[in-house]
Length: 346
Image 1 (tube, rainbow, N blue to C red):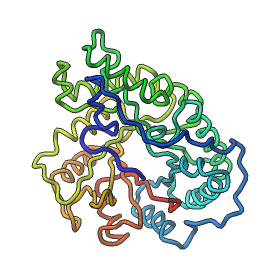
Image 2 (spheres, helix red, strand yellow):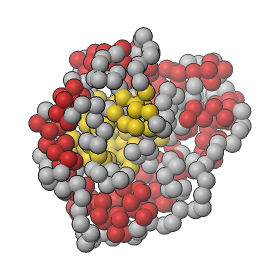
Image 3 (tube, helix red, strand yellow):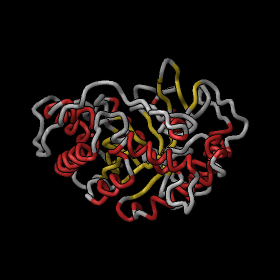
């Protein structure tokens, strides 16, 4: 899975939008068209089957009372061609058939630097994934991450500052496949059951220049999502990267947790996805606890929210553990109700 952008949202703050600076797209040629929507079982061997570490992780998480979601980057496999896609679907379906699995996450930041560069291509992927998984894993809910950059640009305000208007225009031009209007279409197609939504918030300094604060911008973003009726078309959840390299350096995690956990929940988010339990990124290990499963201010804040009834998700791969599978999952279950478990599909 790709790393969520730390601190100011997965859109990388979009600070350039206020100045008119172009945002960089991933270099490369136009992406190949993915396989047709029709699906048939792969003849390739299935990986991630019962008896391996991925299946063992599902079993262990279920035994601890966690709700399990299988996580796979099916976009990459779809773009790689029919055999790759079918092989991944077969692997995911095998894992999803185990007890305790509620659904399948099929895309990480769908349409954001994943080579799906048009709304039409995103919809073709959703059609193909839904058809394949409804056949291979009936009854499992399908979940995607969605970053909608223009939500961080104070949408719907009666008199938005000039910088916010420029921000929205820049976001729509840069990511036409991730405009709010495009998301309307994806959700109305009823291919997605659950959305983990990132509101693409700007840096606090940008909002100060616009005469508001980040918490106001977060409320505005979620109000726009609700105004568009997204919460009636799918289960709407929030998502945020709060993991850190090394030891947690903040003495008070309250402001971040207020902005990215409390406000979305107050605005109707059914849950909050917190990236991530433990993952290597750019030569460092990002985690929520401190090394050695030691607590910190962030963890204590998450514990408080769990005790207050928050439904919280995180991500775990059995290939990246702090101690061992049972110990890590037992600690994880103190805060989190749900866990995304890697499928081992690459």
